[in-house]
Amino acid sequence: MIYPSIDKILTIVDSKYNLVHIAATRSKDMQKNNHYQMPDTEYKCKKNLGRALEEIEKGLIKF
Image 1 (spheres, rainbow, N blue to C red):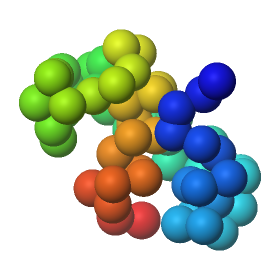
Image 2: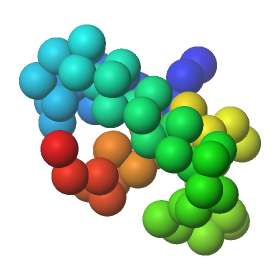
Image 3: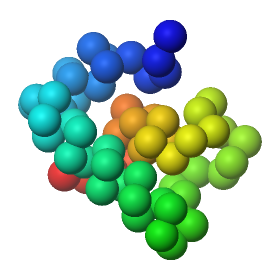
Image 4: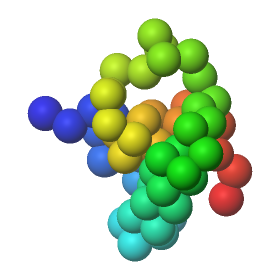
């Protein structure tokens, strides 16, 4: 099962397309700059895309 739940995130973001755009942009930024907003131990996902979704869920990304 995917964490965090897409249904839960869609209550924060207005559309699936906007969610994909925000998560992909943040994931690429993580890969390029190696900058994370939380310590590695707080992330449940190991991949940048999952970590970007976690940051969106916790409200760390403003859009």
